Image (cartoon, rainbow, N blue to C red; front, side, top):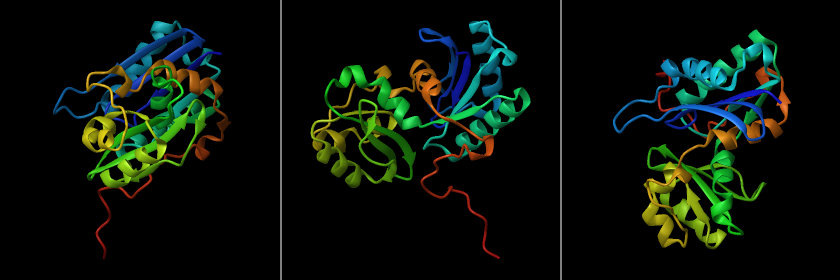
Length: 225
């Protein structure tokens, strides 16, 4: 299956173009410390880069997939709007892929039989979190304060915690019995290979039915009249 998948829910912009299992071209941008995410300015260029590296054009694709979060409100809006536009232009089916599931899938081999707690730094002193064992979700994604996150980790009994939120709340998670890889570990980064694998298996839907998982209201809200 030829597919294009991208995720803009985290600080990174991750794009994967795939001709089949094991044949994946990845293009990504990871902002440097203090640098803003490049979702708005770099996504389409990274799409072109990944497609070119895979030897594919939009007309050769069988499907598109997009990360639906949870994550950055602005990032999700950019990614999903872009995916819908490309799907419409190329008349392609569109699938949504959970960002936390992608993170957890990347940690499966390291975790072994242990559950994986995937955590994305949500700002406002919270983490977007969900737990998985293999391909089975153990709970629903939620925005959790550090104490609630620690409670969830403790209930899982010896989980492996990964993602930018696991790095930020390392002390609370470790105190609750979770293992957290070193800050530099690739397990904390969204991996395009796992994004493409989940995208190939995801159910497609009507373009307008692929919705973001915001989990909470945006930081900016209309001023009451």
